[in-house]
Image 1 (cartoon, rainbow, N blue to C red):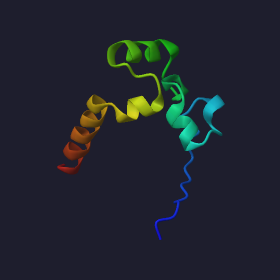
Image 2: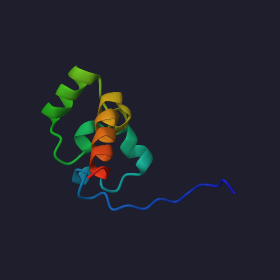
Image 3: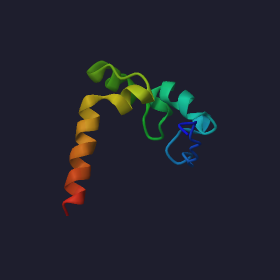
Image 4: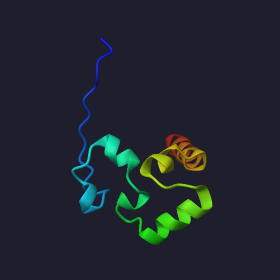
Length: 78
């Protein structure tokens, strides 16, 4: 009981090709530009505005988490 849980997901559509085979731990530490559709310029703006440098920083950012929660609540209220 309480042992490790194996997680499997096809993330190839949401990651740049160079990051498709990385572990979840490596992805959390990867630069934001590892996400498909996020350019180096976008990553620079995220760093300047919110000090977001990694995928983990983005996922843990209070503003992005709050916005995602609001969207989820609004969607479930439909």
